[in-house]
Amino acid sequence: MKRPKEPAVFATLSSNVDNTAYSQQPPELSRFKKERIIVLLGECLLKSGCPGHRAEEALQHSARILGLNNASFSLLPETVLVTFMTDNRQQQQSLMIKSPQSLDMGKIGQVQRIMNQCLLAADDDDELDQCIESLLSVSNSPPTWGFFGTVFAFFVSSFTACAMLFDGSWIDCTLSGALGLVVGVLFVLAGYRPIYGRVFEISACVFVSALAQALHSYCCFTSVAVSGVLILLPGYAMTMAVMELSARRVTTGTIRLIYAVFYAFLLAYGFQIGSRAYASIAEALGVTNTDENPHADDLCGQNPISPWFYIPLLPLLSISIGMSYGSSIRQWYAQMGGAIIAFCLCYFMNKVVPDPPIVESTAAFAVGLYSHFVLKLTGEPPLISVAVGITLLVPGSIGVKGAYALLHQEDTNQTLFPIKMLTVALGLAAGLFASAMIVYPAGKKRTLLISL
Image 1 (spheres, rainbow, N blue to C red):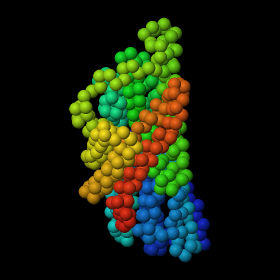
Image 2 (image 1 turned 90 degrees about the vertical axis):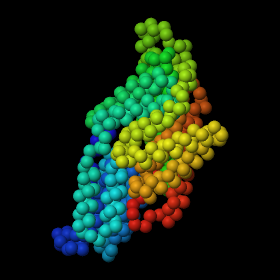
Image 3 (image 1 turned 180 degrees about the vertical axis):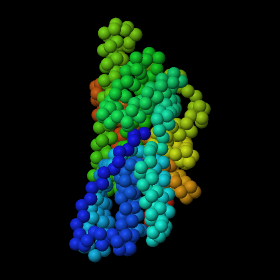
Image 4 (image 1 turned 135 degrees about the vertical axis):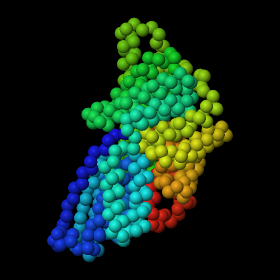
């Protein structure tokens, strides 16, 4: 995963009292520790990729329990604005916390466990010190999975997704897994070389598209190319954007929504450049085995693997997606249950219900209920159990396929692909919010709850 940079914290302080005397008073020292906990919590939530509306709710909830009733928060992508004010309103402190976002479910689970322990003993100074040390450790720790874990996750997710989500054959799955392996290496390289990170998505899609187009006589271009960049598809980002808009977080939700649509165009542009580059090179070399329509998928849907193979492949798909999200080993079991519920409901309901939004909303509702059940049993944040299941429900390929067809001017009806992405995400958001309302109609009183 991308190695996060150290967060930058900027503070402006306006006060009528001396800062040295302020910090030496025991009650004020305890308040300083609580404020430090809130700042570190904001850093950790940014670094681990917590949804913006849930991060703001977590900060407000923690500040209220810690006795910082006059604290206020405002979130922007990669930025948290925090304002502390004393009870007599004579002193105000404003902080701006900046940190590049990544996705690390393992750290989200650690943060929730640390904060729940801290909030249950909010008046214990020793517990506050331990909480600060633990949050610092999480903030400064490396990503949950290193180079080999990330590359393995890309390879397995591309291989299994090609079979289960795109009806690929064994040849398609093998080629897709090999392409996913290369994309995983490029992904790690982009994390260590920010200059390359600016063109990572386009370069990865160019490589995948060109190679898949070169082998289109032996495989399905769409299945191989799209599943090869499965982890990069913007479906999860689109769902998060709709969730934030539904939670009345207009600024962050709008930014994420526009970025998700743009990101779909970005990947489709890379596919377009790769396909045209191969066509130009093949024409220059006099290659004669190209079809009249180089984008035809004549082999798609032919010789798909038996559905019985889905039984061993589904756990592998769940684990690989979880690893790409930074999930720890102890979180795999909860995510696997969510993935099984989501996939099985969609697989069987699609045979009797012809309306995809109804099927996906029902599956999202079931996954949401399951995630809160896991919270009761294991204490894992609902976000952990929901993430993989929602990823299987979100057809992020809708945006990439639609933009790709639009750029090639193959189907003018594909101009509506952002509406299709938004419709699917709205159905998932409705199902998740409904499940949370049923389980916790009044919210959590003392402990922290991090969900989607």
